[in-house]
Length: 203
Image 1 (tube, rainbow, N blue to C red):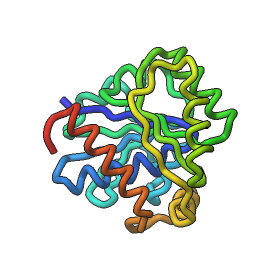
Image 2 (cartoon, one colour):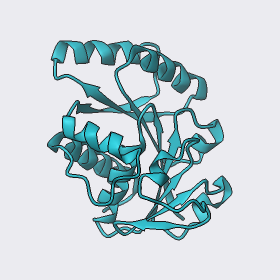
Image 3 (spheres, one colour):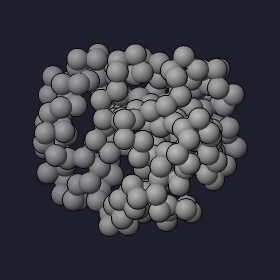
Image 4 (tube, rainbow, N blue to C red):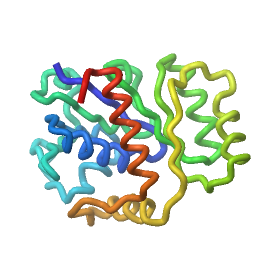
């Protein structure tokens, strides 16, 4: 049975793609499902208009809007699902692991604080796009943690011009090769894979 890893939040698409490619590089069979409304991840790899076709990018298969009843039936060790901004509770419940990716906008921190409490499901929180000011970062983390007992752990990704450039270029379907991401992005991806290793067996 596939292990389902769900990514959601204000900007999860690039993280989901990079994590899937990093997992595949360890020798695992990996599939990515773009289940978001906008389809930004599926179309970032120059996918065809026909949503029924799987597209392979860096040895990872990408699908669009795969029915949730089939997620566990897919013949892969790991299925990474790009869930978009506010996925239904059922989609979250089907995931073995949930990763909330959010920027530092106060409205998003407010929204996802309430969203996590409403759904009563734990998630690892990846906070991205901040300037490396320890006092400000600690303030934002405390702000998000208020009354929120569903945060499993934090991952932190400071703002890098290269990461932002790739994230934006993806939306125009212009990503045809592996992105040269920042050292901080690589560190976060390593954290993600280690988290999956602890909870899903050895890599």
